[in-house]
Image (cartoon, rainbow, N blue to C red; front, side):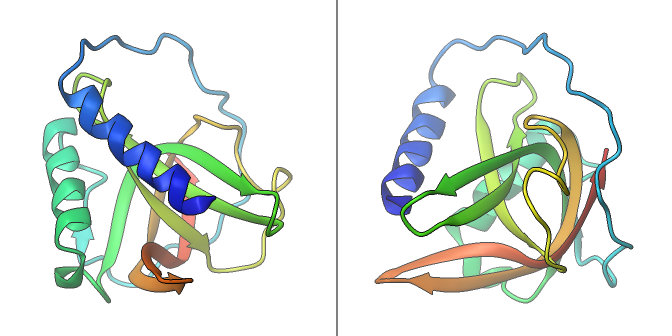
Length: 155
């Protein structure tokens, strides 16, 4: 199921590059989420880059992930979750739109401490800043990438 969702997200990302764009007008809720202290030294800080630069760099990360393994990456984007009911598992992501807010790339993250959804997380689509170590992991025959031992806060 996760493979299908990842494939669909990839296809949507590619298709949206060639489609018309529109800005989101809904503002995210700004209540304070459960947070932790900052991660160690950041190797790649995408949270301060322009939308186009961030989108390009995240594309590079997903295209050539081996170059980024072990690096502490900091990103800013919108909180999203995928709930796999079959495995009773949640996958959290920071989704980064491009400068026109039409095309998205996302990076999964795993909080450094045990957290319970929805109690310890912000509402969906809330802008967050996440920092963690870029790491591969296996599920079945597929390799996925995540920011492990992540901290996050509201942007």
